[in-house]
Length: 346
Image 1 (spheres, one colour):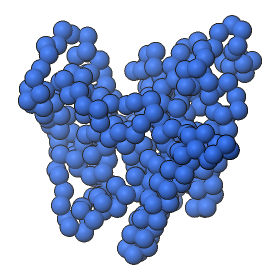
Image 2 (tube, helix red, strand yellow):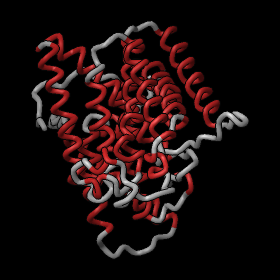
Image 3 (cartoon, helix red, strand yellow):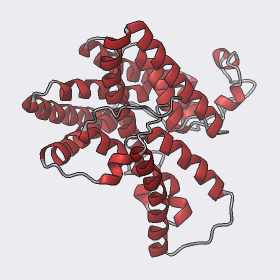
């Protein structure tokens, strides 16, 4: 973890705003229970896709964009080996932090970012087509494991691993009972599927960095439409050949990362139009977008503390007001950090 830097790096408006929007979404989805905001679209469900399910994939996509940007800048300055080493260290630290703040439910957003990032580091400097093949290949391998091994049954809750039915490879894993105690976000192998969004984020950055507006527009639309169409095609049953595969963040089967990645391209294009073409920006999103992971980690810790207290039930207006205050605390913190030129890279 590094602390303050003396020079403020040049920012990409759409990327900062999109990153800030993703953090806003994370705060809203994670803190909804504190403020009685009991809406279907703010909840994760086993087999449907809601607003809540768009947020973590979007942030993963943005991590990929930032990762590619960081690689291109840093590798020119300090070399490939040093840059790759630095990225391995960064994503390893994220995974370790996740172990500390997610006791009993390890496979949440921060862990997925850390482990997916470690996978992506191996491909970050490769040609575009190799990163694309890697993205689809990891989803394909994960889907095959889910379909043809007991992992899929465990992941969907159809079975629980016990002394008699636990595969040998799983038995050999340290902390097996802890690591396989929760099926959240695809479980221990879920980062393979999450890595699609991260790697496609690197592709999106290359499209944006090329500064060919027409190709960026057409490319973003093509990726968005193509991925969503492929997701739907895999979702529906194919007669006797294939049963329906659910859109499920819990299972992370193929329709989810494809659909979520397609939506990421649409959202990136929308923010590019609004922020870079129309020059409209929401200041709170920009400042939160400059220290996103730090804000997210602090919010998780604060939510854990508040959940341990006796919180009164709130009416809907009071709930909205309470969340506005909660969000305002983090905006104030992020704004102060920006004023002091403090950018914490984890």
